[in-house]
Image 1 (tube, rainbow, N blue to C red):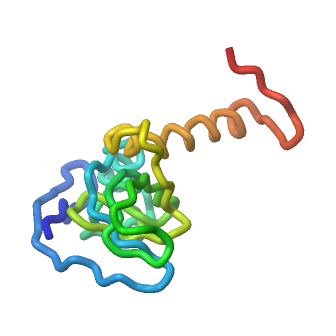
Image 2: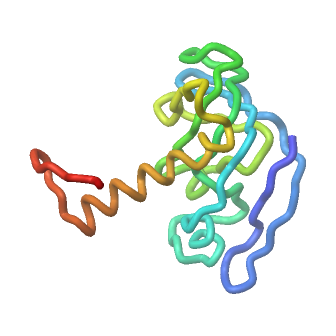
Length: 148
C-alpha cells in the first residue's frame, strides 16, 4: 500500500510516498480502507517538531474516514470516521495511507446522510469544540451551555 511518511521533523521536514505492507488484522482492531484523512494543526505541530514524543519516520494524521475491510466489531463495508486520540499520527502510524489498522474504540459508524469526506472532518471538530468549552470556557459537569 502507499503511505505518506514524514522522514524528518523540524523547520524543514521531509515527506515522501513509501510502499508498505497492508497491516494484518488483529483482535480489538479494525482494518479500514482509507478514503480521506485530514491535515490539521496537530499534524503541522508534529511536522514542526513541537510534539516531543513523536518520532520519525511516521505516517501523520489522527482523524479521517473510510470503509471497514476486516473487523470483529463492524461489518465489512461499514462507512466509518476515525478519531485516533493521542496515538495515531503521533506515537504510531496515522491515517495518511491506503489502509489503517485502528482500535475499535476509535471508530465512529457514519450515518448515510454524512459523506466520507464530511466524516473525515467530523472528529477534529468535536474535539475542538470540547476543548473550547472545557479549557477556555471552563464548563464543568452539571453546567448548561446555550448555543445560539
